[in-house]
Image: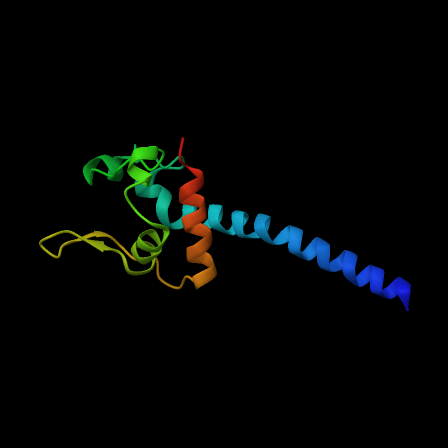
Length: 112
């Protein structure tokens, strides 16, 4: 009985410790698939589409200080529009709340 309890605790420990890296891997995959074409692999926005759309450099700490995690999550989930109601960033369709949270954390990790 004690042995199976220890194995369960050890298994739980591995599952919990693996979770952040799974989210990180998923966020990196989502970033590459849905964000990098405009924001770039590194988040600087130095892509053809990024330059055309005047994408902000997400590695800039002062820029990141201007938005909350909630605002970033809303942008990811619902997209962004300018003052004239023109879409300036498409929403990422089909993402779960956990995917959005992991992408926000990924964006925060880009800060230099």
